[in-house]
Image (cartoon, rainbow, N blue to C red; front, side, top):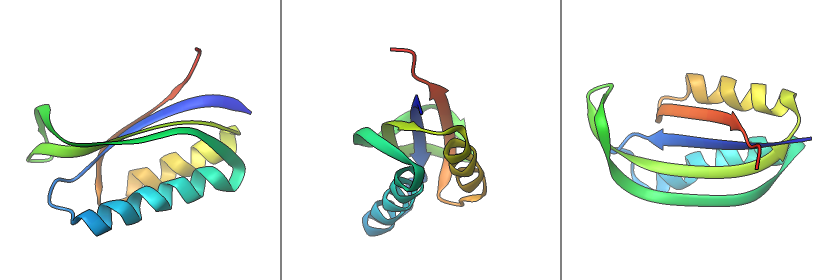
Length: 94
């Protein structure tokens, strides 16, 4: 298993309970074939530039170890999720 880091931004108009549900959904995908080492909901922040007509977003940072298949599934789900306006999955070299 390799170490990865994912940061994703959830739309600002999503309710707090729905934000928690989205976070738990992604945690479940990662936990199905990997292990979460660090999880942090950074809260609502201002974006550097407008993304999909939004100026704010709820930032979430997750460090985890998983197989490439789990990462591919996570990326697929994030891509089709309406709540996520931007995401980035990187290989953690540290």
